Length: 180
Image (cartoon, rainbow, N blue to C red; front, side, top):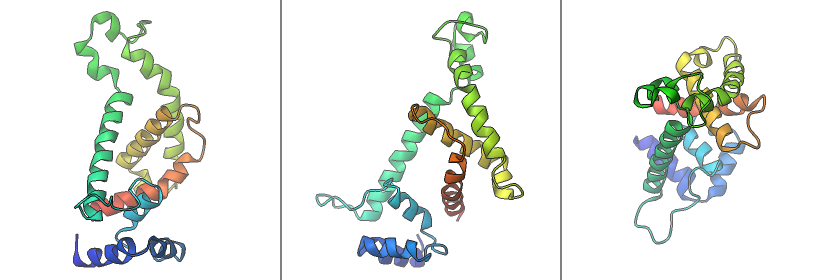
């Protein structure tokens, strides 16, 4: 973290959380290099305060939390975004067949959620036409995957048109800061 980022962090996160909220409401986070950290904080993805019993700094607590959430995302991705073609070689032929009616066949789950995945993909592909960032295949695939996993975890709500537009600004900020 650069010296400027450390100063911004100290100013926004270590004093009074109302200062961070005020900075966001006044639009002063637009040029802030810690904007994605603020998004995570406001969306309660990061803890509000450092636990009193911890010797870690709040930044270390944040770093551990982000690391744990990335590991959880990787686990969910492996569990919920299964491509049956990848696991086919390790399965008996009866289960590896896309025409299999067996409940344990990974193809059943794949086909069950294919309509959801396609609906999300159609919306993401139409997101901000002409914007090279959102037209990039890697960005679209990642957004589809994030929304798909969220929908699988929240099956009663599932996907609603416009969710991709809610994800877009957060996604762009987090992506841009990851590249810095």
